Length: 466
Ligand SMILES: Nc1nc2c(ncn2[C@@H]2O[C@H](COP(=O)(O)OP(=O)(O)OP(=O)(O)O)[C@@H](O)[C@H]2O)c(=O)[nH]1
Ligand SMILES: [Mg+2]
Image (tube, rainbow, N blue to C red; front, side, top):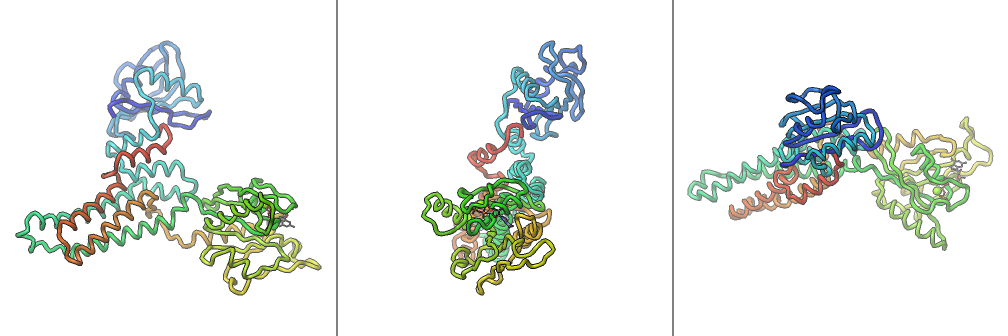
């Protein structure tokens, strides 16, 4: 962190304004060498005051590259807690690149991905959960994911993990007094207080792990698989839900072979929808492979849309074999335009509406026409209701990510062992080791005890300039 880094912070391509960031001990000096406040000056004369906006020019010797705004921020009141300068230039690939190259020629180094945020962490301006939330905010694909990321960025998870750690540190202190001063041990009875603390921390860790399970799909997208026999209109429904022509639709059964996948945002909730090959008995090798892949997607899906068309008879065996009872499923009866005309009157000689086998009548049923866009809005509402109703989360809730969950699980095993140790009256030394390990596991979440490997994994996933 002894050098000064620079990067283009805004996306590649043309736009209104592009931002270049510089951070480090020489940020002010380097900026002053390429920036002048008037057209006639060749460099900045005088001191750049912190948190002011300067209008001026970036120049390479005598040649003006761009008219810019320059914002100096003296550390620690900056994003990285170091001296930072942001230059707002016109956003074109060449102009930003030229300014960046100029900064590099004056002694700045091109930053690595996530290096600005990593510096903010290393200077202890933010903890690791807040740093991760920065990436989550940038990558949020839905309003709900953004809400959780924003809460985490403000320190919601950090605060709660620190509280748990502090309780354990307090307990560890009591245990260590007993180890160091055995004569006074009778005065420090940690048994009752210790069990209370461990119960509280254990139940909170379990709750966090559950919250991860409940809500991680809000970040990654709820997985929906559309499946059924060939030609029932699966691809037509896929295109309706995506509101674009992604899957090929033809009157020929067996049109879709490879699974087709795309993401869509419905009511602020992210979904990843997969259209699959029609499932039926076949000798066609390509179809057989497609059907196997369809089954994989059904197995992995959070919700299955099982599609049928009027005239189909559903056998209980076929149905229950395909859908395990615990799998969320909606029976979607498509092509209802063949049954009713647009005024809702039955058509003469209409095909029969499929009925669910007796054992499965609790499965929700929706009638639609993908071709005529009927019932799609209601189907969307049903999907959202089924997938999101169990979540009772407000803006202050935290959603631990997979890394946090793994650390919590590890902490939980040490905590359970510590509690058993107290109950069975194991030596204080063993108890102290379990407590220390659980404190360390929780510390990896906030970064207090995180290894370099963990830091590299986290920050390498950032974009350059953040
Ligand atoms: N009448 C009517 N026809 C429909 C409807 N939805 C789809 N179709 C037609 O049914 C045929 C098959 O549609 P697809 O969407 O390709 O069906 P699929 O289930 O993806 O078919 P495969 O990929 O071959 O398994 C096409 O001719 C569609 O126009 C509907 O709601 N009503
Ligand atoms: Mg298809």
